[in-house]
Length: 240
Image 1 (cartoon, rainbow, N blue to C red):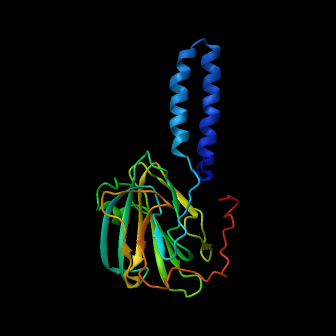
Image 2: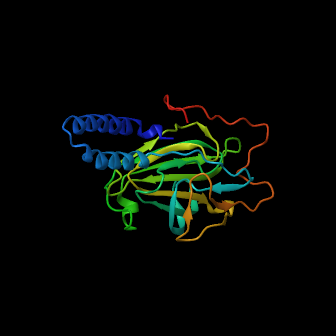
Image 3: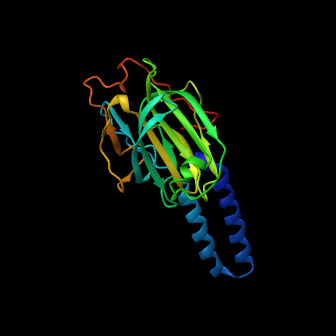
């Protein structure tokens, strides 16, 4: 399945590919169809968006993106939470699936877009200066902070797609956007929730599948009452 976040791009690629194939066939240059098809398939492959089987366990936080854990560190003060937080940074290369997913159940309390540079995210200093988009989640009922996802643009990644809106309630593993052409996605968890980390630096992770942390409480602050319905409606005409 191809991601609807890249619909304009992959429709354009398909149209150009068909025109090129018709042209080379009319000119008798059929052998040129091989590189044309190869290139178009690589572009379409970038926008792949397979369905994911999100783990059902209570009190877990899953990865918001596919990629490799490039950093796990503590922040003494994370302004969106008003206190300390644990940051898990996931680096996505051009071969990874680039659709971002919600790490847990939560209600979007704020979306903060920041203009900036487009330096390589392999350089840690770029995290402070590159264009980014922060999605802050709170518990839908108790209203305390549960997580934040930060989409960071990179050297080639010039387009950040955010498909959620403030006030929307998300399910764990739900699609929330995309970063086109590789970059970094960061997950922030309030330290006061005492998350037990289940990953380490250098580990490969998969969005919506890999468990990054578990809450140790018997009644996890991430869980919803069983009778609570979660809104998974489409956003701005995009069916997710």
